[in-house]
Image 1 (cartoon, rainbow, N blue to C red):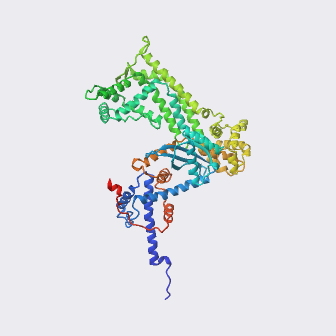
Image 2: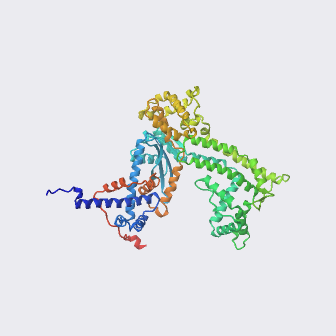
Image 3: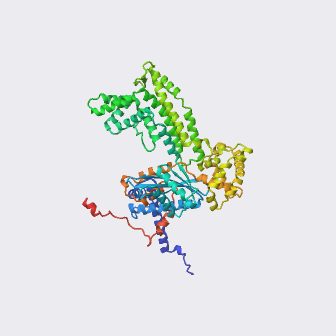
Length: 625
């Protein structure tokens, strides 16, 4: 009988090796997935051990019970290592995306962490292979020296050079929050990159406009003192806070905490503080009155309570807060939230500011105050509370008329100031006029401004703006293989094609968004010889950033990750954790294979499964303590 040789894979030794490799791969997949979960959900490295124990507890009786994840690499140090390789895969994909994009914009800002170190945070906006705008976390960098304009410039160049990215041939815009040091830094970079655009964050502009408008408004100063006084009175005393809750329970009012009126997001903080006063009003008045009459309280506390109570009972302040200031801040807060979106474009920015001014024009302070007095204040009684009034200098003036005139004058002044400051900060955007700021020339691609039909108007539409854009980016476009001299010739062809597409689109309103419409055009006509050059300007437009709110959210993440309990996190680990937390990859879509291969190969000696570490020996310094 012939001896048939068995295939190599059927031999017992080979089978054992294959099974061992599958066993190790499945084990490593579980460990890497657990490590990814830690980073994605901002958990400490030490939770790695407990999560592995939890897995064994839940799956210890399954068919894979031999895969004990607590026997190998089960320590916080190895969790850090796994996260580093997972983050490296994510970073490499971001760098590849940037390399493949012809143009990029950079949004940056600085802040201090819990260790009082100056951190600079960088986000990059670019286009993916489908010409969809993407804003990605790039790096957080610890600034060793002082945060001067020159140091920031060197920091900017350094982090991009480390990734082999040449800003001088890619970067078209820097977006900052507008402090003087950032402006100086942008000017220094513009000396090296002549075509570079700079933009002051739209959300910061709005808040500065509001702050400018609120200067020299006496009622506003009194309201601000009242909001902060109420917050401090209950925040600093557990007794007063508990008494307010008990009072609210007796009066049927569900008490909410009084937030601080001054915070990093000034508009939202102030609006929430007013909402809390509105909700807790009758309970606040009753509790403050009770505190003032309670002789067991300290005299200082009783005096504070009396002062806050008197302000809450001032009819002028009540009308100013609830009739004028709160609706006004509600409008500005809603606008501020719209300006904080990641997909903010120049068309949505302009339309948002226009809507804000339209809403402000609808404010009729005289009618609002009269209506409030008629409907909610009867003989100076508001919500069953007797209000008081500061006496007017004119004794012959009717009492209600005195209140009306005093509040009305300051309300109309506040409203007029706000309209003016918004116009000062956003004026060219809302009018769409040609300005010295080259960024505004991109408004010609705003589909809301397009001519309705193919007539003589289309021949002149956007001619000056397109000419300026072509001249401004001439050097950059030439280096990318485009011909700026042909842009003007392609302008009318593109306008005619856009009008044709809009006419054939059923839902025209949804199609008019810049970040929805133009990527579709690029996918159809990017390689078209008759439109290739002018569409390069569209690519630049789609990469522009008009808000640094995402950077601010990045700093909020930094403070959650690098908290007081993790103040010794180094820059590399902080970058890894923030990169994974901000990535689009979810736990469901996470695939650890690539990271596992990098980890397996990135070693001077072969990897092997090792037993878990035992308890760490105490250091000599720890023994002394």
